[in-house]
Amino acid sequence: ERVAYSGAVLPGVEIEGVSVAGLDEADAGDAVAAFADTVETEPIPVTAGDVELALDPTAIGVQVDDVAAIRAARLVGRSGNPVEQTVGSILRRFRDETVPLEVTWDDTALDYTIDAWATEADTPPVDGDLAFDGATVTEVPPVDGSVIDRDAARALLSDAIESPERATVDLPMI
Image (cartoon, rainbow, N blue to C red; front, side, top):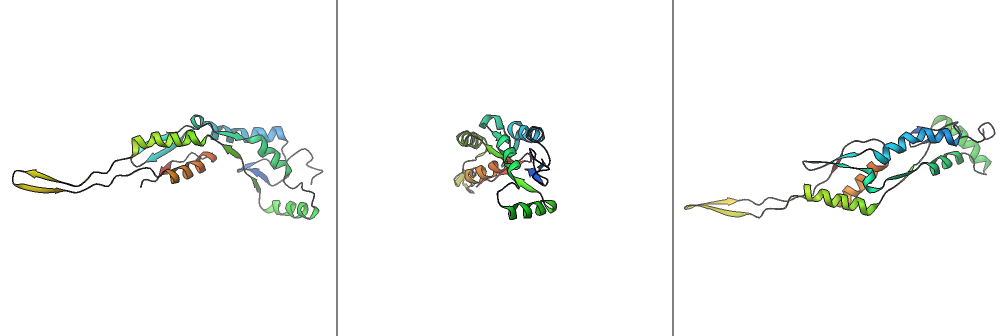
C-alpha cells in the first residue's frame, strides 16, 4: 500500500470529513481549500436571548493550518511499525481515519466580541417596589436580569469556529 500510494495519502484517510484518499499534497490542498475558506470567512449566526448576532471569523483572526493537516494525513499508516501499518491498512477499509484540521484565532478578540454582544443582550435586574396610586398601594415584583454565560459562550463558539457548518449558536443566558 505504501509503495502504490507513494507521494499520496493512503486510502481511508480524511481531513475533517473531506476525503483526501489517494491524493497528492497539491490535490489534497484543493480538496481542503473550500472547507478552510468557509471556516476562515463565513459568519456564524449567533443568538443571545432575543438578540440576533453574527460572529465574523475575520474579525477574530481565524486561520486554518491546512498544510499541516495534509502532511499529517500523508503520515497516516506510514509509521515504522509493520504491525501498525498492516492493521491500519485493514481498519481503514472499514472506517476512515480522520485527521483534525488545526484552527486558531485570537482569544482576546473573541472575548472582546462577547463583551460587545453583552452590551446588546444583557438585561439588568429590576428591584421590586411599591407603587402608590392615591390610597392604593400595589406591589411591583422584582425582575431577574440575565447576562451571557461567557464561559459557556466561549466553549460553544470555539466548537462552531472549527466547524464548516454554520448553524446558529444559541448563547446561554444566566
